[in-house]
Image (cartoon, rainbow over all chains, first blue to last red):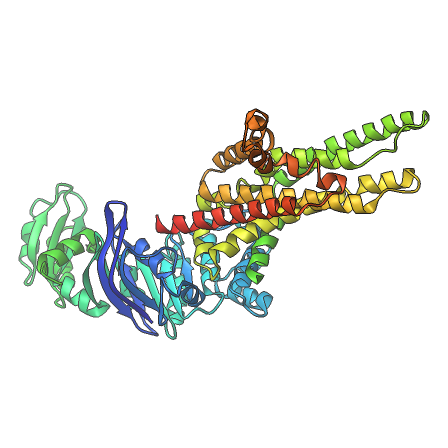
Length: 308
Length: 247
């Protein structure tokens, strides 16, 4: 459904993306993972026909994004990162306007249907300007879904939503992704793991890794790191933990907490907890440390610097 | 074609969401109404001494004159504000040609001005009731055709300029400056020139209305002039949007 080869985009002298090559099949949810300024939005803007690439080729639903831009745009639903909306319009009127541009037959009924899907049915008569950020995000999503697009391109779809809404929106995306192609960008690793079938990690305009989420996870997380905290003084805490079999890399932090690692799949946390308690400490925290995106990049660029 | 209509309709409705439409309508209709009352009063005084019947030509001229100053306010935010708010990104990724976007914006503004012009029809209707044997409606038709064409040309240029800028006030002042130049200044040197004065006169906005259509004379040259300006504005706007894509 999406086929990108050698895609390059320059803004003046600055190269935003360089020689990107990837594809996405129908019924696949592909995640674009990368820090701000990595080139995610630029790539998405090219795929939606918003702007032409400097070099390279991109096909969406079999149409070239430059030569057959209108055909591409008919088949793509797009949620831009900033969710631009007409704040002085009523929700229903706005969606009807977008629906008319997409020439949807029976547009009123379809707008109601989509509003129901994103859970905004009761706000249909309100002004967009009066909606919260999360609700606006969902209006944007409704707009992207209106014409039942073959390809859905979502730029940070869950940003600004509260946790309950995040779950709902992810559920919705997963549902849509069963039949259609979804390309979404995020800078949250757990979001990518949660909904995507495949993840492209992009940094400084280049793809640094591309794999299924399971593979990526396995490759990234050779060991799990845990932080442990007890009440009061804990001078010999590190020594105590080291006695447990399987514990590695014990490190005492300046704030008194202790970090340690164990090999993936060999969870020693119960043993550590028992050891800490029998040694007379009051255990107040035992928490896995998630890997930050920066660490993943270090990991990726360190482990496979020659990836083409 | 349907896309143009969709854009135009939203734009037309949108005018009534902001105070702008009412301010512009007020600024057109109030001076015209006062001027009309004045003309009626003066001619009623003169009629007793066998003076001429009141005409609607000066009132229609005032409409066009006010449009020079007010139409930039109607077009300034048409495209520039979409660019500033980011909503342009949605329109440019919708299945819509750049030309259709610009033409729709222009048509929306034109529909608003047409509504205003329709309200001013009350003035010739009133005159018609007071003079016998009534007024020459063909002259009124010619005059209104001229009003519509000149408004369409102004709005087209304004839409084109709005597409160039992201700041609506920049668009406003550049548009106003251009209209000022075309209305008052372009033909000024004409009388001092040995040759080419005709060209400058032809370029002037005012010569194509006051001395021709407003008096019931429809020239092909005038119509070509207006249509050229409309085409120029729409072309400039479309090109500006295309350039935005490449940046």
